Image (cartoon, rainbow, N blue to C red; front, side, top):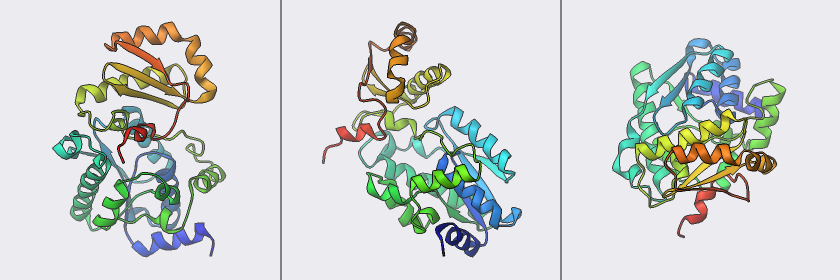
Length: 265
């Protein structure tokens, strides 16, 4: 049995499925496969809404769910306000994921006992992902990981299915832009969002604005570094309006999880 057939078999075995839906590559692929093998009434996509998630990602999730023709709900998420998360230790993602899953599980119980599933893939086991521990503890299923699907395989299948997310750049919680040990605040999250929104509106695809106190460290894809340099004065003016004292460009370019380099072993 190939991986795609196995994925369909696993999803059908759950009966009723609630997908933690972000609008990203993995969860969109998972939602598409679930839509194709489950009755419409047995599938529900739920997107959590919170200041830790970029507003444009919420809007894109809504459009993609409509494109796929599935039942989709937005659910407020307040778990990010817990001290365990705001104190921003290296276990931040564990605490946040635990609260997110509690929110989804509670909601599932209220609407009819759907099996909650999420979109982690095999590659997520090879990097620092403390949230995986919460997934296992809460009894949430990760069918992409169970079938052994890698990110590249998911992208390939997504392109074959003509999904708009086949080549979509990775996205993550805005809190990942703040170094461990530095307290997370609503103000900092808004600064990151405003900075990244500006750069995306300028046409940059892979963008991260990392906060280091009053220093903004901008990461863009290696192929887009020269473009950012050409827009130096415009970028500097905008970030100075956001009250940054220094605005820097990371010459290494965009790197997923680069803040983990600051994590103490």
